[in-house]
Image 1 (tube, rainbow, N blue to C red):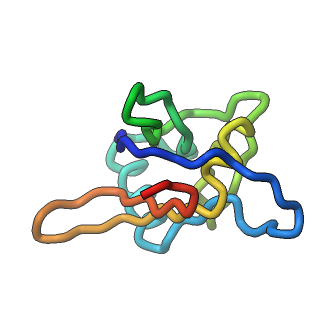
Image 2: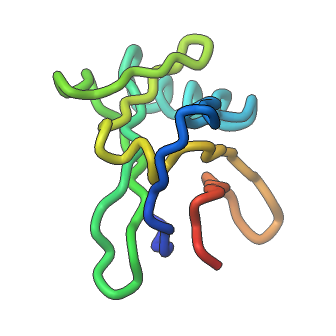
Image 3: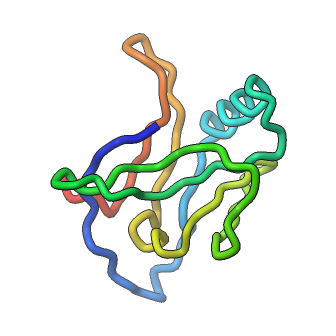
Length: 116
């Protein structure tokens, strides 16, 4: 799944350390369901950014069997999230949720670094 968005340049503030990213209970439940339905037990979720051209960045959400050597691995219950350290400051504080609504279902990312 890819979503285009413009993200503000990161600022480093060691006193403002909080969770890098968070997954809601709904997101964790949907990721488990997807792992099960696609025979991917133990796979982790790659959460990152790709260059999106003039529109800014595109979020990257996809399953991978194992992390890259440089990845930060975050654990949410039994769901692993792989995060490239180069994306850390851009994604810091983001919350990944899953919404199943009348108009559609999908992952929703709330990123406090996005310029609106």
